[in-house]
Amino acid sequence: MRKDILLKLYEYGELNQTKLMSFCGLNNVKHREILDDMVSKELIIRTDEQWGNTTVIKYKASEKGMAILRELLEPYEELFPRSMEEKSKDGKSP
Image 1 (cartoon, rainbow, N blue to C red):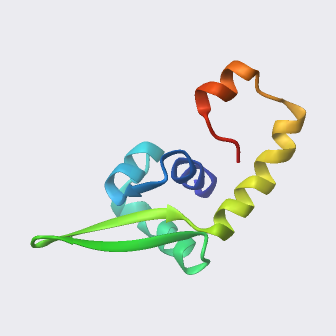
Image 2: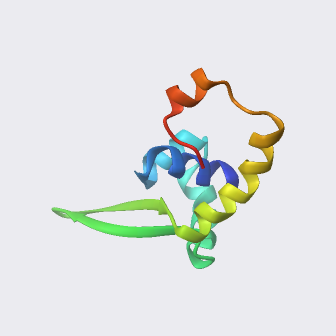
């Protein structure tokens, strides 16, 4: 689950909590502690934004989280390189 969260934040940059949980197939109530744990370990960054009377919680991957993600993905990419077409569609390389 943690890897999926980091991958989605890498892919989209910054996501609010609802979208992040939805994209990862997680439940806000059941899986919130995973996000809190990742924040406490400095893998992701949480920001709270006020929108009128509502607080929107947003997450993005930290430098530490991105470094770990690169360590996981680079050996995989070396073993199973993507075609040039896939790389151009993605536009990113970890």
